[in-house]
Image (cartoon, rainbow over all chains, first blue to last red; front, side, top):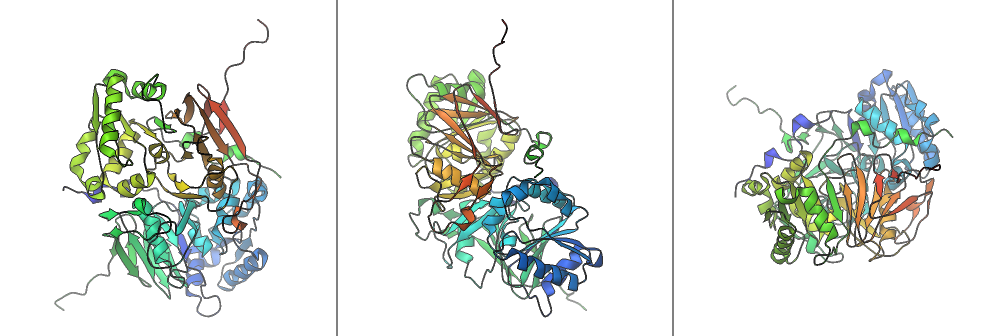
Length: 287
Length: 287
């Protein structure tokens, strides 16, 4: 068999560069070191940051929005605004677009990611977010806000480590990341089975599972760097030699062969285009 | 509320023109008038057509592939080749890419669309199909082969006319159509509920439900024309004023308000970019 897997998928020369993305696995430290949120503010521009907080996914949106506003201000951002879009009518109202004027970053809180897709999908507010991100605006999000940045989004699913048919529900997300599906609260909620299932449906897409208090910082060239206390698991099934997902009935487990995983901790990097880790420079053998 | 819904979604000036798409709702006439398949051969170039038939989704792939080969030859296409990719190993084998040399059309048979996404996803064969389609190759498909052309694909689901949470499973498809989700055997299998559910997740995307022996011919400018015996239903939820899909528990029905549907029969047209029907020219009032 002649194969040339490097020739396919996402060629670097066709990559559309956009702003940074910073999906966070949820439950990030908000009181002590605040490593993850501190990094978000730094990426947003530090003192010069102008951050829009969007608590749409949260059930206690006002409280959650204000809490992040205070944290980001404590961490040095001078301008932080909470934009509490809670209905499609609001999301279609172009008067709310002024909130994004001069914004350097958007932060999407946790909650229910289907609120983000169902309320924002096809509206002026989401289109503005997409345009601003294309022009360079950082987009960060935690938990539901992390899942929602993908084009193919995990809406919900079941826990467990074995991949099973029907254990994950996908739907279109905010469309800011085309190369990967993001999952969060990853090892804490035993979600590897559902991430494997998600990529088995169509192995062109990578799976990224982010632990709590951990983030994947994705730069405009789609190089990912881990920051925070836990791990980021990356699933690459593009060279999967066999699956029988299409034959699995009901909620049965199914087979996947030749799936590559990488589990990365803080400071480690992975190239989402080349589909390989960017390893630390080795020390010279002769000193 | 100020809204400007025409400014968002898929601006015409950003549209990437590709070849024609011809999703067919399944069970198309193969013996008598063969209106739908005849139109496919005409679009493929008639006598000059060079058609690749891909029976990957089918359980009786060899029989089904040969049957379509005979039909297309009877309808005038001089060159018809069956490419029976049945495993990921075959799909990754670049020696199979020669089948597409000079091809004017690809025809994808029915069966199980998850075989198409799981076997072809991320492989050299699918990348070649995508490149050829970008360069102008017609892609047609029936039943599973119709569903699979979308970027967001219905993998499977339940029947019934009321939208209910968890009644539809989406996953990434072949990525040839970004603006719409396609469903098939549409009125015959009572699938409007699942199509409504699919678009409710994220209303940026249109839903296209195609009846049996009916096709939606989508031109490079994303104008759709219906051909065949049944109807094509188009669901536009982009101006949906309200949904509570994100609050629906388990398999419960949920609310959608302000969803626009169009049901079109043979000869009628719809613009997937403008999201409106292209109506027949009215007769002059004064003759």
